[in-house]
Length: 530
Image 1 (cartoon, rainbow, N blue to C red):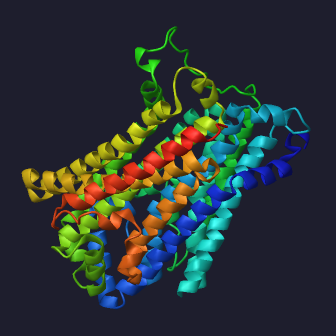
Image 2 (cartoon, rainbow, N blue to C red; image 1 turned 30 degrees about the vertical axis):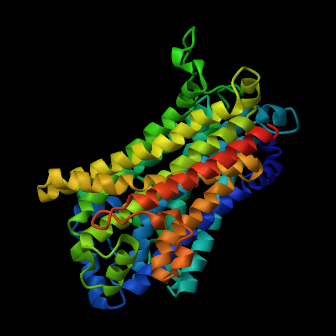
Image 3 (cartoon, rainbow, N blue to C red; image 1 turned 60 degrees about the vertical axis):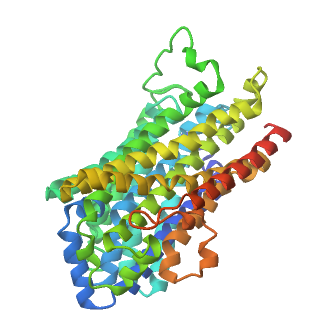
């Protein structure tokens, strides 16, 4: 047992260090679950409307690939569990990976584990503590989600089955992250491996559902979450698959940790070139080197998401034709044009918020460079603070534009091919996506203001973005006043396609973003580094 000495204290330290990150993730996912249940309960209040919705989803290949097939069709709880399983499982997997890598390979790369290991700490204690942080996060998420669904009025058994379904991918990818932390030599490499596993699991499930290849849904943890069949004849035995698979992967991780040196990975880092590339001679080149991997991964995700939105678009009328409440909410979210245009505008608003998440991530990378003590030596050279930060801010400005362009293009291609009108649909959906960029810039500017003026509060930028997301998703359902809705920059974006295009609000958002960014740069110039 000496290999596990100190695990309890490391777990306590890990939970304390990640308390904000953990609370934000649990809050966001529980809000997603609660808003989904409440929305369905409000929108489909008759058996006929519920039956038509289920038939429309199961008959739409793109919707099935994205969300899965509805197996428990006779209740609000059944369609709530369906909506949460695939997308929620994907998000829970991402949460688990980020938490575990932070407390394993991330601490090791930063040199913290070497200092900790000099004390009375067992060889396996850091890995165990990192895995337990992921377990605690997933168990807490399952319990709070179940309680939220019960408060909304759903049956307790189905609510707990739904919460436990999320633990299947959560625990599995917790253990996958533990394995990845032993394989890769850097935190970035470990995250890439583990997040790639999450993406592959989601895609395999999508292919299995859309292509009716049932066995493919049984080879991924996200597929297992769908097979729990909450609010129907619950398959409680499927819930056990997550802990069993996680235990097997954890054993693999423990075996690997004994076969490598501290600070090394089983896959050695590639030997770099003898001389630096010419583009690394300035802050912009360095920012590109640091940001390019994340940008390429986000581009792939946006391409897939855009294609899914475009694929669903043609059949959206059949899904909501018998729900006046749903049509009204789409009108509030996407404008009072045709039903297809309202849906497209609402989806582009969601895509814009996701692009804002990328922009916030770009800005917070600067804070990571500072806390890792890589910024101070850099600023000892002729490079000044503002020049260095502008290199990253260019990605916060141009990155969302590129991501939105890819999503709009793939959505236009998918819809245009279905309706045989590429020349008409591609420009419409491309423009509808691109108008979201100024609102995403405002979110990035708020992150820059926090980083520049109050760096310890910089992670609160995720909370601000979460408020924008909840206003966009829950505001129309709860019929919040326009004054409250106007707190989100995305409320001011023209409702395209189909709505009135106006440059005035876009210019106003751009000016606001520039002013907030300038304030953040001023704060960065005046404060201490470190």
